[in-house]
Amino acid sequence: MHIVVTRAALTAALCGVLAACHHASSTPPAPRPSSPPVAAAPTYASGTDVIAAMHDRYAGKWYSTITFTQKTSRLTAGDKWNVQTWYEAAHVPGRLRIDFDPIGAGNGVIYAHDSVFTVSGGRALPGQPSINPLLLLGFDVYGQPPARTNALLRQEGFDLERIHRATFENRPMLVVGALAGDSRRKQFWIDAEHLYFVRLIEAQPRDTSRLQDIRFARYVRDGTAWVAPRVEIWTDGKLVFHEDYEGIRTNVPLDEAIFDPMKWKTARHWIAP
Image: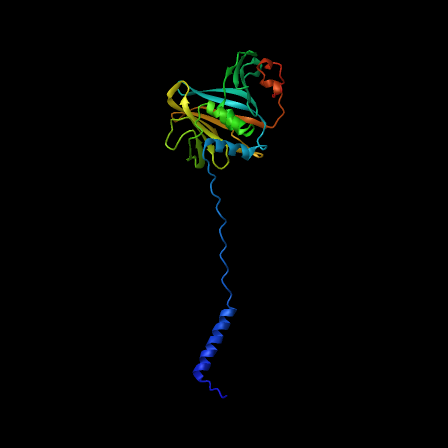
């Protein structure tokens, strides 16, 4: 059979081959790198979820003891500051001792066994039932079962079913005890990223018409945990009290007897005489 190929057909065929060769030899564009997925913020249905998260984050990682020297500044009449030195030691959970300067005078306070004991001249007065919420939220929450922390918080008047998110000093916060916009109800604020205690807002004990805002400030890392070397108390937006810690030591051996009011003078003190 004789096949006649026209010039037009050859031209079309040649163009097709060239186009195919050009397509095959072209380097395909490099794929764009995909952005890493953004982790969704954890959801918390109640304050009990927050307490569980705090405990689980630092269980076995938080320090069991801490000691420091505290410069205590209190605003007095005439806007003058009265400054004192206190010496503190805590054993997590639930034990705190404060010695007022001078140590030899034997004056101070002990929190232990869900009670507070005032010591004067080395002699302890009868204890009164008391929970220190700052000790509970700043330290004990990491060293005891969440169920006990929740029970004590409810005992202290926090509504653990009320929760919202907020921002404080450019940090994301979890607020437990109040809904958004409610500044009067007793509440505590937790840093949403690091899960440490930041604020406690409540009515002032001696004048419930005024709000007291207690803050743990200037957090720094301590190994796998955190320490806030400053505590502030604000009343109706005015700074009226602050504590500044020096000589902070964690996980130091402590004589358990220092938390026994009856052994105030005989227990081995953590500060060398």
